[in-house]
Length: 278
Image 1 (cartoon, rainbow, N blue to C red):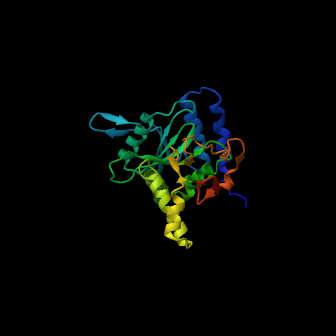
Image 2: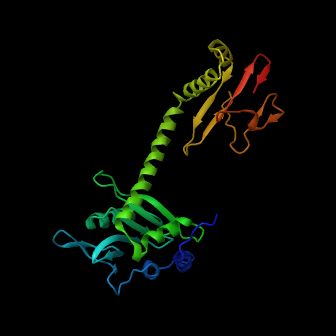
């Protein structure tokens, strides 16, 4: 199935990629981004795009977003620019946060080595977080999605915020699952929980509890939870079995592939007397 690509995305990539090859000044990169925004219909000449818009803070101070997009003279999206070779720093995110909150907008855009949409959850007391991003590369379909949402003729700030909220909810759900999985497979709970799942599986298949208990007395399972959420099961000597080549050996010489040991997503080895059961 052919993936739809916004016609402006390849043009934007073509315009911005040369700035990745040299240590170009940030002002030059910003001017090129302003030209790219013209592809999407935003223009300084009709007042829909402004650079260095002064936002008063207190009686004598002001902050100035690199770019602000406007509709009917009302700001709808602040944009912070950093040259592609600049190391991403928390300070840049804080600057964008200041613009978003001063303008009372929940969505902001940070453009540097990639394009990032930030979302500020209303009244949660937390800083805005990146909820969607695109590498400046033709192959990244996320760039096409961002172009679709930012086209002036069909721009809708409520729809953009709704999209960011949905992305944020997905991230939070993923984080919650990651935390639950980490707890489920923790050092204290992992083996017990996996054994419990196996007991339920075999009990549902009609095996007698006594048979299950006798067989499980000969089972050794070690479970570890890696930082990125991968699950691995190790042998008794705690030597981690490679994810790429997970093989077990009976005699230390001959190795069997992982398909011989798979059961419900967990690799297990059963040893009873001098025989192995897989």
